[in-house]
Structure formats: C-alpha cells, structure tokens
Amino acid sequence: MIEGYITRAGREKLIKEVEELRERKKILSREIGEAMEKGDLSENAEYHAAKERMGEVLRRIDAAQTKLSKAKLIEEVQGDADTVAIGIKVTLQDKATGDEITYSLVGSEDSDPTEGRISVYSPMAQGLLGKKQGEEAEVTLPAGKRVFKILKTEPAL
Image (cartoon, rainbow, N blue to C red; front, side, top):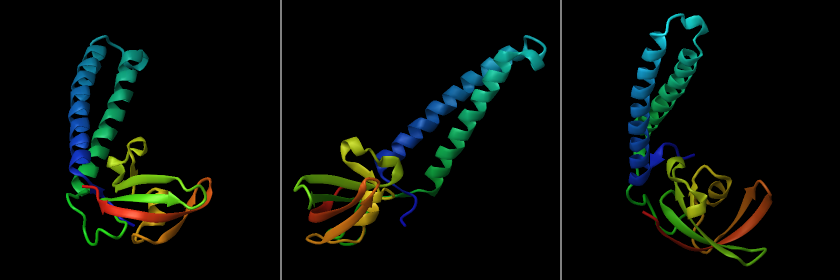
C-alpha cells in the first residue's frame, strides 16, 4: 500500500490548517487566562470548556504536523504513465452500464471525490492500482463488485 504521499496543493492546505489552528490556540489561551481570573476552577464551566477546546486544537495541530513531516511530496508521476498509480488520471468505462468516469489518484489529503480526485486508499483505487490502459479491473466496492475497462491513463500532476 502507498503511504504518506501528498501533492503540493495538499501540502499547502495542511500548512494553512496548522496556521489557522495556531491562531485558534492563541485565542483559546486568552480565554483560559480570562476564565482562570474568575476564581474557583472546579466550578468554572468557561474554563473547562476552553480547556477541552484547547485539547482538541492541540491534537489537530499535532496530527497535521505529523502528516506534513512524514508525507512525501509528489510532483510528477513515478514510473509508467500507462499504469494506474498515484498521480495518474484514469478514464474508466463501467462494463455493466457503459458509463465513463474519470478519476485522478491522489493521497488522502488531496482527495475530493466531488472533484474527481480519489485517495489511493479508496476501494476504487485499490482495485485499479497496477492495471494498464486497455485492461479490465474487477473492483470490490461497498455496493458490490464492478468491472471497469481502463480506457485512458495520463499524468494528473
């Protein structure tokens, strides 16, 4: 399985998220300080709520920074552009319906199925990885097995 890949756009999105979370952390620090000034912390709902929100923000910052530090930046297709892999845009034909659909295979951070970008970890991508243009792939999806013909592959990056 392919792990830890991210495009430049996905990387920038994560960096922006970390920056926004750091700003939120500053605001929460002030809120915690203000709540502490109100006295008895054992019965101070504002204090406890702010501490809880701070914990969530810190977890999200840590998760995003971990992804950034471990992710390998992909800027070009590695290997043969005729083979379905991360960074490839693939056009498929559903053998049952004849419908055509196009997906770009990307890392988890870059996926947006509504925009035609699916994670290489998705069931669809897992069934297509390693297949070549012209081949058929039987893909196990949540709704059952489907067969797709790979009509075209091209670099998506």
